[in-house]
Image 1 (cartoon, rainbow, N blue to C red):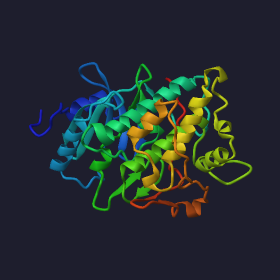
Image 2 (image 1 turned 30 degrees about the vertical axis):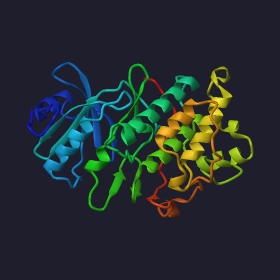
Image 3 (image 1 turned 180 degrees about the vertical axis):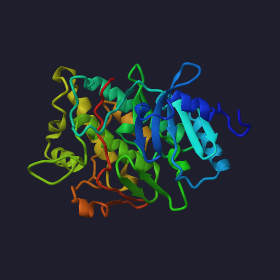
Image 4 (image 1 turned 90 degrees about the horizontal axis):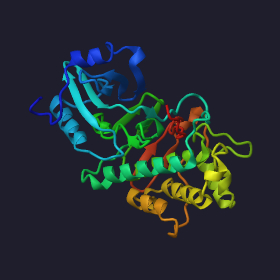
Length: 336
């Protein structure tokens, strides 16, 4: 074990063998931080190996410090970091392997008959919310995820949600404060805050209710994306029309669905100071009898052409987030 690293340090040869020399057949994902491979470690344990790209401007000492910080983050709704590999130009993070995942990019909105029930979907979003509370507050480290989306929410064998990629933005946070997501051609530039994560959670919540992608959403009566559509239905008193028809009606608790939509709209309000902190979000979702404030207009809810979308932005009193066409991904859940 490296004296500077507070968790197991894996040898490159072992990781190469575990992934069949980083075979394309072993690759289970690819994002802005680099590809992810499924591998079998020498202990027999399955692992997810994230092979980081070389775009980080950090030196080796800074990288080790950030890895140690990530290793300190322990919560039931966060993916566990098992160790790392630092050898030559290679920097890899080894995580526990999740047998189930959110599949967000197969070109369609709805999934197969294996779509989870509304009850399970609600449990998943509650788990994600609690994981964010831990990152923002309970860990004492005040970590901003910066890239919360469906593909970063994994499900273990018991369908417990676990947030992945937390802390990685710090490693790739160069002088220009830029985070790039190659997976979705997304670029977010500006000052991130915990309220940025709150906004992303709100979108995730609306997508969970509707089974629709925000940026792929189309409606014959208007040109809004999913956020705008939800806002229109809310103001018309027709919020339940947002509900995904694939959910079994017998499993739906209407008051719970309406509360989810209400809380989601509070999370995606245009100005960051209007958005609730994540600990309040958890309380609002869990407390059926609690009174909620009326939501204000969402940020970034108009559908724009591809020529203009890179110039679209959410302007808040203390942050500016420029968001491209592929900002948000689907949140429907499929066990596999």
